[in-house]
Every structure is written in C-alpha cells, then in structure tokens.
Length: 263
Image 1 (cartoon, helix red, strand yellow):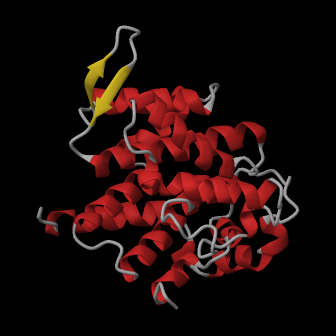
Image 2 (cartoon, rainbow, N blue to C red; image 1 turned 30 degrees about the horizontal axis):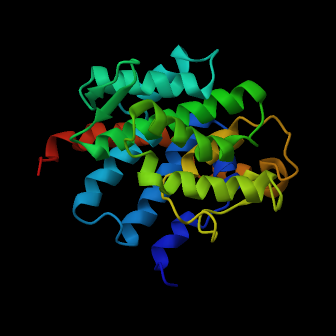
C-alpha cells in the first residue's frame, strides 16, 4: 500500500462506526475522529507543523473543544448552514483567531489569521455543526456530502479568501463524494463508503461529518447501518471498550493533563 498500514484505520465502513456508536451522534463523531487521527499519525501526516494542525482539528471536530460545536448547533438550530458559517466566523473574530485585514465601502470585510491550524479547527467545528443541523432537520444523511462540498465555499466568501477547511481538500473530496453518492453516478449512500476509497482519501477530516449525518438518518438510506452493519451493534454491546468513547477520552485526558508539557 502506498499510504502504509495506517490507512486501514480509515478503511472501516462508515455504517460500522455508526453502529459501534449505537447511532449516538457525538459518540460516533468522537470514534470516527479517533480512527482518522490514528490513520494520519501512522501514515506520517502529523509530522512537525502538521502535528498541531491535526490535534486541533480533531479536538474541535471530534471532541467539541471549548463547546464550540454544541454552541453553534444551539445558536442555529432553526437556521441554515450559512447561518452556521456566519456564527463560526463571528466566534473566531471574537476569540482573536481571525482579524479584519481590510473593509470595503460596501461593508464587506476581508479577514486574516496568524494561526491557520486554529482557524481550520474552527471551520471543522462549523462543518460538524452544519452536518448535524442539516441532516438532523431532514432526518436524512444524504446531504452530508453536499455540506462538505459547498459549505467550504461559504467560509471563503464570508472571510474574503481565508483557506477553507483542510486547505481546500475537504471541498475537493466532498464534491467527488456528492457525485458518487447522489449525483449522476449514484454508486451508494454515504454510509456504505470507507474513507480509504479513491474518491475520499483526499482529506483526513471528512469521516466525522459523514458519521454524524448517518447517525441522524431515520431510515431513508438503502444502505442503512441496520442493513450493512447489524453485527456491529452486537459487537458494541459485547465490548465495553467501544462504549461511550467521548466520555472515555475526556476521562483519560483529565488523568494525564498534568503530565503534558508545552513544546
């Protein structure tokens, strides 16, 4: 394998992860982030500058760092994904993650950042919130690929050109994903894919939003978790290690936080 054995952490069918989380959205997002992060580390994609990039990304996307994901969901529970983009940019500005570089007479603002990894993490939190609000409103997972494909553009427009999630890789991957899940080709539903698929391996941050969308699906998919992954619901019950991943990570972090040194 060109990518190394670590890619196998991404080679688990989305619906299997959904089943292992018992369709609990935040647990599914956490488990997906653990697996995807393991893949990136094993493949050498978290070396040097990229270590912090990945750590921040998965903390905000997968583990609701600073409660950002849940805050965005609550604030925009009756809104659209564009509202979540506006709210994410506003929160990033208020927290000093981005700053206004230029303001035009029309009122349009161009933003800049001195910390792209942190800004990327904020965007990823926005994507997760967008997937949960949109798929939750429709009770269908089908739109999750379109969210990852086109919500990214809205971040670019709203900030005047700041890099979109994962430096454009999420958008490129999401467009292909949308094509293959419900466009001209229609190969399968989002839950039937693995993230090592040739279309999807372009970004390490798309597994969690896809899992979120399928956790919220109410049975609209031909390839449902119950159909493709029924055994994994039983496996979860047999192995306590797989239960409550978000809670387990939080407890483990609490235990070792005093041992971690900056730098």
